[in-house]
Length: 475
Image (tube, rainbow, N blue to C red; front, top):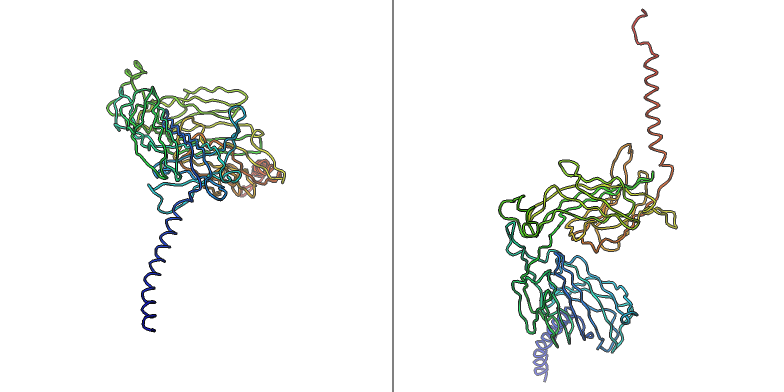
């Protein structure tokens, strides 16, 4: 009897070990997949390919089919798109047509191990939990940079620029999607080729994939579209913007640009005669003008490069904004670069305010003033007046920030400088940010007293020199 019990225990041990391993495996799988209490009833995706910046507009109608309330909805992106993601925004839509209300929602990346197709997940936090059986409509904006691949990679002066765009005909989602449709809009009707995933239709500049019905989670069907895009690929490799605050009434801005045309590289020689005689054909993808949107009441504007001042610029403005149109010394073709500096002044009272706790704060715009431009690396340095204390910055999105000390004319201890850094910046990130600090007005007298003391000592030394007899004996 004892022997049979011991044999039973020995047989039971492998079974328990197997159950333990299987339970751990189940926990790993369940932790890598979100609970399937959400179902997407309809999904519509519109992809704008008219620029070198890809904008994706995604509309989802989600239903809670689970037994408990849902407080979030997940959005999935392929790893290649997540790598080039510059902006992701979401909003909840309530009402229809004229009574339509758009309510912004928070979006945060989440990490789950071993997601199918290497999907990267983002959590959209709902304003109020979604009850069982209820539905909600969400709008998601995705902005992708460096997602168009020039092919061929080199073109001549009179050739058009062709690019590849890679994506999926099916919307990558962690949920089951009942109905979905994808629209791609190209700059013109010149489409060399595209992947067909039935049903696929093309009309004019629009390419339609779908409607597709009842696809399981993480479905993926790769597509490749080869089309003409002569939009200039203006990319700022590095932008350093210095904002110097002076309590004497001015705000001085200096911006250092390293600009490159990131499209298909120019092959062959450049003919200025051909470029000017046939502007619509020769160098169709090049650009020779840039437009900057500046704050109103801008003054003392200058524009120069390593050679010197550049006079080919035009400034126009009104009470709402100022526009500065500049021309580099030469048109930019694919692979060509230009380095220049732009500076201007602004009235301090338009940007410097005082908070309720006695601190002063600068309210300025983050981002790049160049339109339709990608900034690979942006650095903003806010130089505060000497004598400022407790500096801090409030930015509406994650950035790298730290403090350093700068020195200028007549500085003794140096100035606190708030440094903000961010990569992959587009125009949609041009949002206001604030820099808070404390300042004692007595420090406004430091520089005038220093100058007055220096002049007094200089003249006192001159008077003493003229009245002192340094001869050895009297004449």
